[in-house]
Length: 70
Image (cartoon, rainbow, N blue to C red; front, side):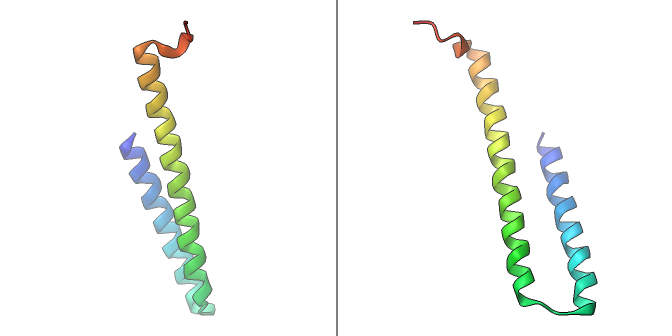
């Protein structure tokens, strides 16, 4: 799972650098860097939340607490 997470990060960084390099030739936009940082941060937060949910579900189901017995 960590390998998939790292692969996703490298793909996003590579696509971002490739796209910004192509745009830097045509026009330099300082606001674009801020936009790229926010997009990467958003993807990072979503991925961390998804991995936390997977980890939490695996821990809960391995303990057997998902039946809500009282």
